[in-house]
Length: 155
Ligand code: 4NP
Image (cartoon, rainbow, N blue to C red; front, side, top):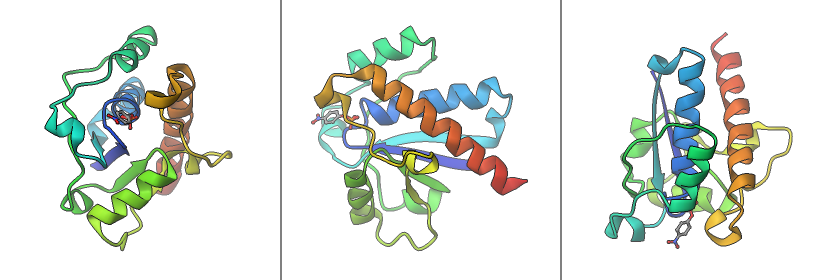
């Protein structure tokens, strides 16, 4: 089982979108039983508020026919480092905050999602940009390339 944790600042926009997009992707390929997929925040404020997926992010998933289930924001914990094989941040700042919480990346598990692509860069925060379409396509691109990376590793 390959355990993947998607991480962003608030765990109400990008990382839950990535969680459900990736779940749908592996489901469509018939390989969902190989994966455990979750998402988390680097901040704690949405966990305190028990916030669900942000409305515009849900709208985007619905528009793209990506199924999603009940989700409540949670902050990444130190023990997630041992539980997961891949911890995938959306932007450079996420990586610094992930390492602040989990400690050293001694097993090389922490990556930025678009670093698996030919165009390594941050995925902009749609909470601030308002551009959920670009976020969606960036996440799909990153997830496709991440899946290729895993495929190549296991072959
Ligand atoms: P996310 O976006 O990191 O993609 O989930 C954000 C959502 C909420 C906040 C910041 C970023 N916030 O400040 O509450």
